[in-house]
Image 1 (cartoon, rainbow, N blue to C red):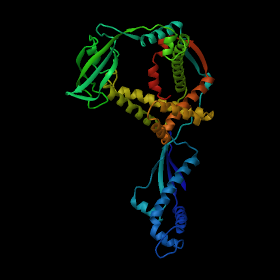
Image 2: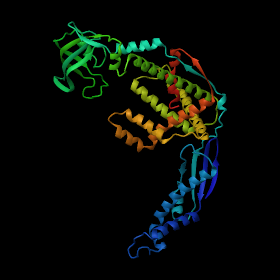
Image 3: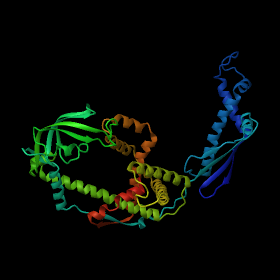
Image 4: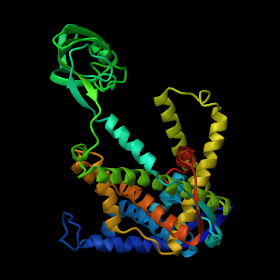
Length: 454
């Protein structure tokens, strides 16, 4: 094998690899020797077929296999000998001239092919201990806990029957039959259905049609299913509901006591307040974590300026751009609606793609140098969390991830990333800074959109 570098501009590499005809002949001879003991040819005893006869019958087809194997082995060896890390699978270009290929297959010519690829850049990591960050914190106050408890009370009212007409906030218990073009449709019939008016739990027009009714009254309500309704046969269709009101009940704020707390799964009011406070603290800690992580990634991005493999950036941009167009299609919005143009948006997302690639390479380098790994137990835990998001489909989801290495890698990647971020934060100078609740959550979604998984 002879390897010649024909292009080494930036991170781009192009190599010409030549495998001599004599080397191919040796591989062909070895392969025919293997076939000799297995071949079953009329007129010859098993294992007694002359190699020259095998060459005459199978020589060209076996040489095709030999060439394919030679390309795989020599391309891998060429990369290994150069001690370079391709950014993606090298592209192999075999001779296009049919006569040249036939010469190789007939054992009369050398095999010459080119391989092109981009290499990962050398990454010199900055002194991580020189990174200085503020970590925003927002303590939970007693008043905020009180307000949260009040909201819980407001959303869990007691209902007492009343004689008057139903109004927003009341719970109306009804029997109903839904009809499309005079025929009852599947899923449109219910008995003793409790409906809280104003909650928005039914299709437009239905709850409004119940307002003003009293227990014992009947009514036919006109309503229309939304265009995006999940059942195609009903989407966008106008229907009629024959309704009988069985009870109208007015909401009453429950008394905040241990019995109420127990109805929500707590042992006492005190424990319920602690649970509420814990949830508020968890949400704020998550927001704080995302903010300090965003600041860290900003510092890392600004502190490193190495070249990026163009294909990696282009692939990342394509993934981002495809999602942007998909989101626009679903939201029925245009670039003009968002106060920009397609050209400006592409420039912005090209920058975001470059940032993601740079940070991905950088975090990978830091993790590798410091032997940061993700255990199988950590991946399994993440898999269980994902499975819980699909109740009733647990087996299918489990099998999908176990049989799809790329999907399992997507679970592993954010775990690795967070562990590397934690490692860097241990080295950096991080100072807690108390901020308002509004400031803590400000621009949080924008940061997530820019950094993606990072």
